[in-house]
Length: 247
Ligand code: PEP
Image (spheres, protein in one colour):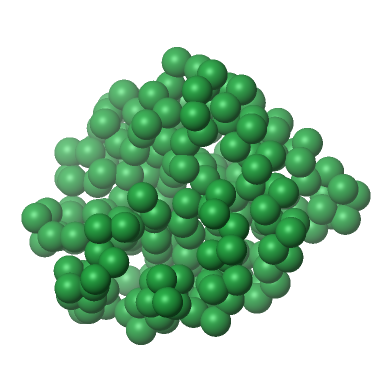
C-alpha cells in the first residue's frame, strides 16, 4: 500500500472542499485506486465537516498536530487526540518540523504519539535534518536519534507511518538525489526494525514533491508514499503526482 498525504498547513475554508471532491472523484475511478490511500490534513477548523462529508468516500481526514494530553486540560487553544477522534479524524501528523521549530520536544512528541494511538488515531511521525546537519554529514545520526527518542517497541507499529522530511527541502524546490534518498530510507527502516523488532512501518518522503519530480522517486521501492505540502492545495497538482507516480 502506498500513501499520498496532503498537508494543507494554514490553508482552507469550508468551500475548499471542492479541491478534495475532485481528488476523491479521481481516486474513485482510477485504475490504480487499490494501490494507494489518500489522506488530507486540513486545519483544525475543517476537520469535523470534512470528515463527515468524506466518511464513506475514498479520502481520509487527519489532523496536522495534536496536544500531548489525552482528553481535556486547561491548556488554552490546545486540541487533544480524544477531541480529534470525536470529530472523525483518523490520522494525525506528529513532529512536523514547523512544530518542532515552535518548541515541540522529543518528550512532548512521545506523549503525542502515545495519546494519539490510545485514541485510535493513526500517527504520521515526521522526522528530518536541517541544512547544517546535512552539510556536516549528520543526517543519519540525527534521524536515528529522532526515532529512538520518541518511538517505543510497545507502540502499535501498524498504526504508525514515518515521514522523512528534510527541513531544507520543505517548500524550497530542493530535493535529495535518488541515491541519497535510497540510502536514507533504508537507514530509517533499519532503525525502525530495531525499535519494533519486526518489519518496519511505512516510510514516506516529503519535501517539494510535485508532478514533475515524483517519477524520480518511484525508482526507490523502499519509499511507501509521500507527504505533500504546497502541491496538495491544488487538485490538479495533487492528482498529477499520483498519475505520474503510476505512469
Ligand atoms: C510539508 O510541509 O510537509 C511539505 C512537504 O511541504 P512541501 O511539499 O511544500 O515542501
